[in-house]
Amino acid sequence: MSFLRRAATVLAAASALTLALAAPALAHVTINPGTAEQGSFTKVAFRVPNERDDAGTTKIEVAFPTEHPLAFVSVKPVPGWTVKVTESKLPQPVKTEFGDLEEAVTKVEWSGGKINPGEFQEFEVSMGQLPKDVDQLIFPTTQTYSGGEVVKWSDAPKSDGTEAEHPAPVLKLTPATADAHGTPSTPATTAPAAKPTLTPVAATSSSDNTARLLGGAGLAVGVIGLVVAALALRRRPS
Image (cartoon, rainbow, N blue to C red):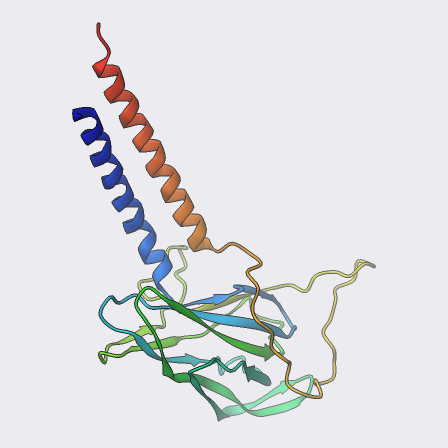
């Protein structure tokens, strides 16, 4: 019984350590998928987890970049939520393949719904044309809770690769892929007749958060195995 109690104690401690390491990585607002091709049109989902045990998330505000404005932005309705898209005049017109862009979407706000403790919600957006001369777009996001707390996910990525305390959702932009003839593929040079139609986001790739969680779980299992083996050897008769 003493051996079983020791093993159970080690298991509980290792599990708590694993969850403690994984929780911060899973808590912040992310954009999924996290990559898209430069110069393309894409559809993403802002994934918002509720990280409070005593309050629900009641409002989400996503700021869109003004230094690299997007000419076309449309949103998918979310049952129970009201969406407000804000367009603002740019400091100066931006030349695009579709002409000079003088106004663009600068903020999208979802309100009226509720993300309860232990739940998350995805808010989908179709947008383009993505810029061709930058490698990422940052979308500072504000999360408001039912108790009045406001959390700003607005920290830019750190140059040393470590995660910021309140990281903003980041869409990484990759060079356009080559077609079958080996030449870079290019987006259509005419504007779409209507804003892109949205469909539900499919989970097509594993996130960095999942990798961290699995890595932590594997480490915990390894520690438990070593401790159990050591205890068993100590109990063997000499």
